Image (cartoon, rainbow, N blue to C red):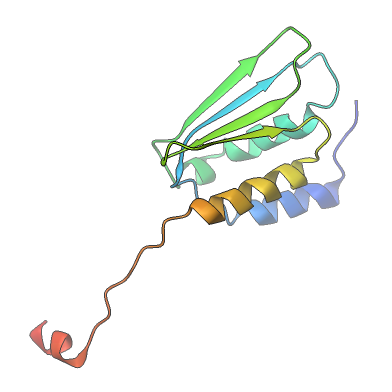
Amino acid sequence: MAVTPVHITKQVIKRLSKVNLRPVKRIAFTFNPFVGDVISLRECLFHLNSRKILGTNPKVTMKVDVKSNLCDPVMEVNYNDDTTTLYKTKNLTSLEIIDNFLQNLDSKAVVEESPILTKKSKKRH
C-alpha cells in the first residue's frame, strides 16, 4: 500500500486552510476500499471531514458510500446553485483533488459586499 509523502500532506494542509464550504450543499465520496488508487480520495475525505473545515458551513452534508464492486473512486460535490461537479480521482493525488476543488469553490464563492461608509453616514451613527 502506497503512503503519501510528508511534503504532499503538508501542502494539502496548507491549501485546506483556505477552504470555505459556504457554497457547498453536499459532498459524496464513493469508493471501493479493496481496489488500489483510493488512498488520495480517502485522505481528502479525512481532511474535509475535520471540525475546522466543516465549521465553515454547518449545513453541508458529507456522505460516504463504500462499494464492493469494481467502481472507480469518485467525489461528487453539489453546490447551493444546484450545479454538480464530479471528480474522478483514480489517478489523482490528494493535492490535485484539493487544488481542483479549491478552484471550483473560488468560482462559486459568494462575494459579500460591505457597505461603503461616507462622511454623512458616519455622522448619522
